[in-house]
Image 1 (tube, helix red, strand yellow):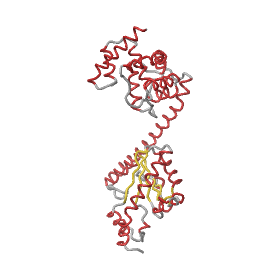
Image 2 (cartoon, rainbow, N blue to C red; image 1 turned 90 degrees about the horizontal axis):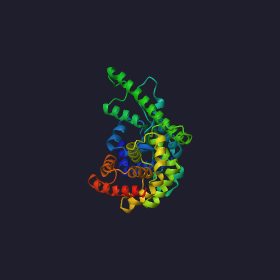
Image 3 (cartoon, rainbow, N blue to C red; image 1 turned 30 degrees about the vertical axis):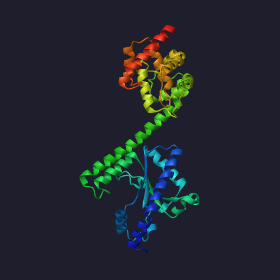
Image 4 (cartoon, one colour; image 1 turned 30 degrees about the horizontal axis):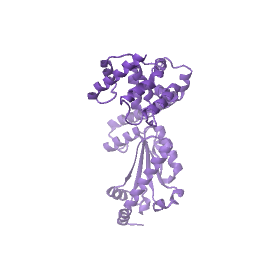
Length: 366
């Protein structure tokens, strides 16, 4: 049995190793969860402070007879957006690491139905035997790490509870126990409702392409999911994106960003395009002139400077709709200003002037 001073001396000597161990577990989890497609709010590691370790040994001296008995010297906290992802992450942790079952606990499952509180899943793990065979991990043999997994709302509860300083119903004044219970119930309902919303949106997105092809969504208002579906599945948009990539000489971003979708919906609204049926008519009306408009704009130096957004075809369809309508320079400036298009405010009058030239050429040719 080691004395407390011996445990603390060994902690001081191995502090750097424990810190690196926690960072390595964090790094591995970040990579694994990314590959599994689990998006988390945060993944962070921490090393138990010397003072905290000393206090813990004093509280549980009969349990901690050596440094290795203390399983939470290093820890990793994973905060998911949705409560369902807590279970997904837990399954991944069990697959990727050696779990110390005796010291691990699902506190939410252990909670009695009539008890208040919002708890997380706690695992104590070691690196798997397969990883420990690798030279770069051999120094971590025998080290343990506590992994906490909780949702954002569970984390909010835990942080506020910690700030208030109450760990159990015994310590809480009688008058506010009911408030704690009510809030815990509300958070649990909110967690489940957010999960239900995500499930609905996934189902909506999975079904959107088929329903659109069957013309079941013609009267539906164009939203982010429907517009993304159009960008990813509409043959005209796919073809226009390829054409514009050749004309503009750029490379597409990998994903449709929420910011570009929001901007494009705003532009479409400017032209009164609100429903799926109106969007399809808008595409059919302008698609044959997009390449001409893009080349004329490029000739005048009007083109994207960076990577191409995946909404670029719709951007140029809007330019085409605008310029073929023979607008005044003031109307062009208003479009640019209201949709925050092109260069900074001070440069938009010049841009509007050049776009007016293009408009006149298009209408003369037409």
